[in-house]
Length: 257
Image (tube, rainbow, N blue to C red; front, side, top):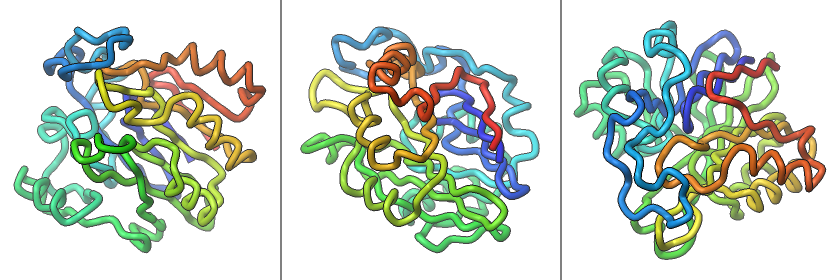
């Protein structure tokens, strides 16, 4: 398999001969207004989104895609640029019936809801749970999911999505025993409500729960409410002695397994 970090949570995953685009956030740098009320310590708090350029051309990202997975429809996972760039008949998977209907109304005809036993072209796609924050803020952030890829010819891949560390992630690790985990780890925060995705301590707990897995940290330095930098996470991994199993890619970087 090949896993390419594009930007934020956007990935290209080539798995068992098929090419998946996950959580496409394809607008040009600065195309959208900043999210309101970012945490005071967010370095790019006053910047338009995305705060980073696409590392490769839009046409290169969308070329040859067999299916799209949208873990949830927040703008930084499914934006106007993606809706314009992708063909309306492309197979597209999303987390629930409401979001499937929303995406159909945006002009996409081949939309399917992910389940724990979804199969696409012989590849098992298993929806996993997630919590996009802790406590009261969950009412604002809404439902999210992750997805586990499995196939007899490949290692098992768990794309955790926009979630903090909690028992649902532990359950997914226990059930699927993933070899590779992609985790959203920018510790994005608003002024109140705490972490919306994993911070460094969450990543450490995940590593302790899955000590033999390779963990790839994404969703970093891309939206104006990020608070955990790539360099800080790398330094933390060195301090904890887990840097051999925790990879923090640059945008555009490709890992091959």
